[in-house]
Image (cartoon, rainbow, N blue to C red; front, top):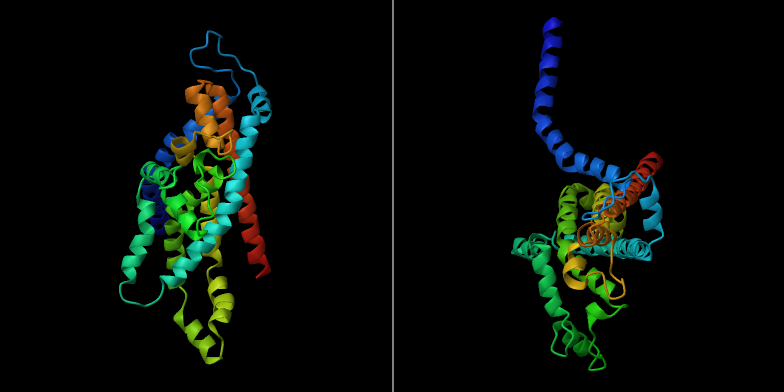
Length: 301
């Protein structure tokens, strides 16, 4: 008995030893900066200011919640997530089903669809600036003119208050859909083939197989994909910084962009810290709600 207890303690010590570097990294690069942000958000810290550092409580939060630019950023993030999450997940599901077919050369198509994920967003954004070029020879304007048989008038997508955010959405979906596609494809390949064979024997068509076999089997995978996509949607920054700088008229500004602008351009470190804390709370709330939905679905099952 003593040997068993000693062995268990040794195994626990070994496990702790192996996970300690990961925990230390999480604390140093995530936990400690976030704690620092919380502390800074309760002060009036501003780089280069002659005013002494003071504790001002929740004043920074009251200020940003009255700031029209920050409120517009929250709205833009919400609109972006509401559109991106269902649309991108649906496209990824469709691509995964198409690329799950047992055909020759399918690995090449999977690589092509996944390739945009590998490219850095800075490079992708620069390329799409050229695609959205505001002249008749721009790729997007030329395509829309061809699609509408010449009715389309040349648009400056990134400077139009109505088209700017949808243009960012299109770029983001093109660049990120491959990541969701690979995850869903892995989920599809884990579905037992005998389920489809049994359904076919019973006379079930492809549509019924998709509704009653594929979707239920992919439920957890789709929930995970939607959760990750939601978090990434609220982290929107690179495209905005490179392509629109939050314009025109704050039509594309986001919480992350406003936080970075406040901290590093305006040198209002405390204001930027308060924005990041609010951002964390919003993402945490979305995560908790989605996890509650998952638990309710499991309870119903």
